[in-house]
Length: 64
Image (cartoon, rainbow, N blue to C red):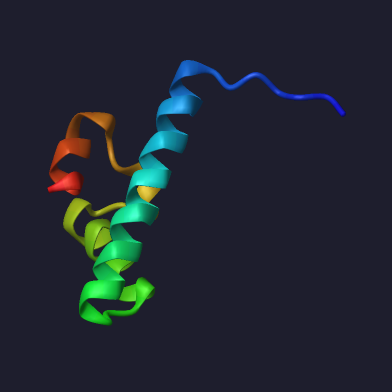
């Protein structure tokens, strides 16, 4: 099986995605808010089609 090397930008993106998943999971368990509602809020706030499209420079705002 061949493994694809992850570039620094891809590694950062994977880390960000994992962070969002972790925060969403914790938030859902604490509040019973559905995942879809949790994931829609950042997309709406940053006017992007996908959470992956949020600029790295604004990532700190997502984590708050």
